[in-house]
Length: 309
Image 1: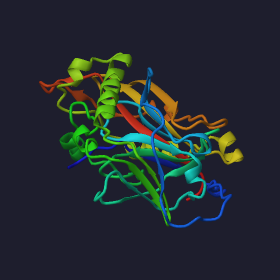
Image 2: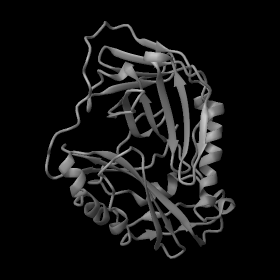
Image 3: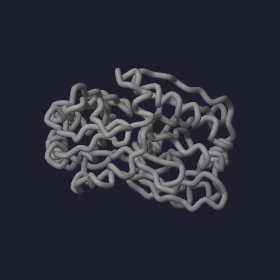
């Protein structure tokens, strides 16, 4: 089954300061997985720019949390898992992801962060239950033909596959944390409805998007992405701050960017992305409606600000 992910622009600073280390405070207690049961119901936050699905697992010192987040309709999502079970997970190290017994593990490389009172966190900019983690390589040009052929009218999370889920397992080396979620199809249906509704919030025609025949195609991507990569915010670079941003641009019938919005997928103090500046020079082939006529639409991507290689 094919999935189309939001592409992530990986912005690497020219000055390598080194990745943020994971927190290491305790000795390894063995290779038995930490299994955590839910202690609360699913909660969904209907925002103007984002939809977030959250749930708490465990209690007291064993409290964990997971967050699925979408910044628009998509077959993938941003994902965060946090809690004391992740305190010895290391940044940049391969982490296996699976959601049911017999599910082939997917190799992922999450960023390491912290979620305040809940504790250390694994943060993914783009993930799918089935396909794992994908980071867009800005050195590779997009294939316009693939964009045309693979883009559904409105992408959505695969609820059929989500119904197979029993848990979320995150394993790094001998350390494994299993969060017993149960099936995720009902929760993902809520996320799909919320994400589709964001199109209206952006001032676009939702009904027209349900039957569009092509999404916008970015034609000068390599040039604009290079400008974004070369402009790591100096204040954040000096402080060694990294983070993930979500960028959305509205595109009119001529393929011109009419609006640019950037939201913070991770909480940062100094990191404010200047990417909307270069995006004013972005050129697109416009989206097409069901009759093949140009229509106003949108384009989304994640921008990962990471210091070092």
